[in-house]
Length: 159
Image (cartoon, rainbow, N blue to C red; front, side):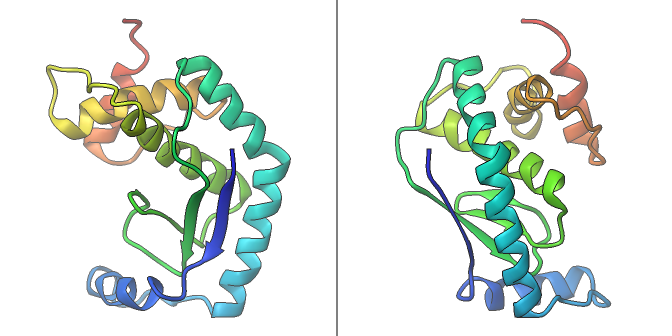
């Protein structure tokens, strides 16, 4: 599985105004600092991420159909996203891997047209398998958001 981790100089300027609206005092890192994070993220992906993605595919029984996948690193964004795959530069290595894996679960399930778990709103339904898979991969951090926390709790229940 190939993930192209790169600084997105085209997306970054479009994202900054929305971040400043929500966080007017946010101090953006320099482009050089973001590029250093990209190098660090590439290294940790090669050292750990490749094997974690193989384990994700094995655990779920699904494989990625469309790759390589571009992973855009930006100086800031209000939340990471899977389409397109955009991740904040502020993370340390472990936080980056957790975020990357989280978004890749969304991509994996989307490419394989896996239906949501029913009976909950879309955010909760969409994130129950994410947290189940992350836990299997060694990431079991309680989310801050109420909907994500509910999905995290529900992901502990076998189905």
